[in-house]
Image 1 (cartoon, one colour):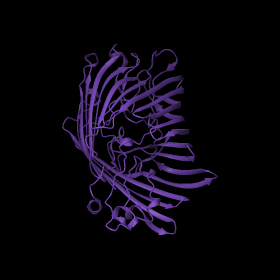
Image 2 (cartoon, helix red, strand yellow):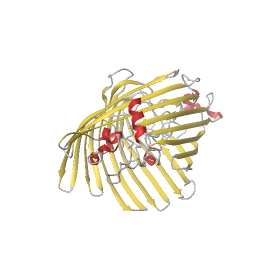
Image 3 (tube, rainbow, N blue to C red):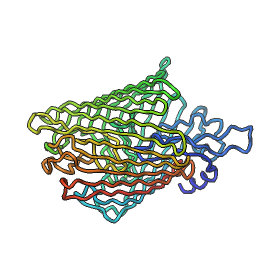
Image 4 (cartoon, one colour):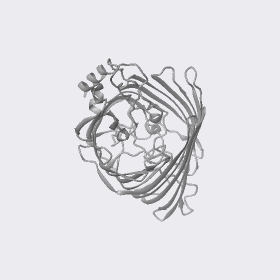
Length: 479
């Protein structure tokens, strides 16, 4: 891989703001194309711009047929086989030292002396243009020196992160795609389905997906299972204790500086075992309905999503919700500052004796922070945010947040659903504050250097415990 990197970098001039693989909370905004060097021969087509996507199989290199000889990277992205059949090669290496103080806000095993994580991915894509596709993505991730809990999100030896086949069927003006196998999935703002970029291992699901697009409309159907992730080599397997079936639809509006998008997502999930602060583990059969609108009008933007959950948890009825909204205003001059206010409210259980469970339980959520310090269960956050872009290569993000329990009768949860503080430990709704700072610098179109820091101050009413400090730097290479 380092040999490929050396040749690739020699073929690319460091001229423009490159796209880069960034934390999940900033990945979509950062996928701006970068310019590769112009050809010495003005009669030949100019080399393309790398525009890496948060999910690698969303990238399309079918248009590289006539410019594949521009440099080494274009040759890797379009390997002709016969006729309209071609292959694509890609990969990623991420190196990340971390410091974790006060993990889980001071509860459980701690890692006070730092650790080092690496994630290596290599993928191949075989396509018969417009008809058939086979995609394989291998991932190998390790954590060195991690003294606390080494979970599958921290380490996973060589395994199939993705392996699927896909068929394309044109139906009049519509385009239908059927995909079967292990695959990453991110729908909308990834509030319900996220690929877990911030963790050391990414998340995939074993699904059958049927997707369609027609004009400004798109949507689809999915059914399958979660993946049971393990620490060893080629040992991840289909989790038949976690089933899901869903539908989604979306429509885009407007253009230029005034755009909008409306989305709807419904998922029916069945988990063999789930537990909450007020209830022991039981079977969870949950219906999740998400409605989202995101729009931009000149310098203003808004993103609002409301989620309703119902169903059965053991013998209890489910009555839960989650609402998230962000309002932002940006300026084009100077450092292009962008101010935003984000509010998140996830429901908690109000009364353990009313025959209902009111705790919002996410399915495959995007974390609210890079390290996923808290889950959205029973959580209310008010968070002002500031983004700056001092240069085309450098982006900085800052935020400050107040943290409350939505219900004082329910606990505080981790992203994975672990109870960090039980509801009966305090009668206070407010339990802490959190500030974050992050930066990403694009070294060239293929490499990004970044950092992410968090300080979380736990309220005196929720001690004994420790304030949370998380600091990480990372170097990502992707081709």
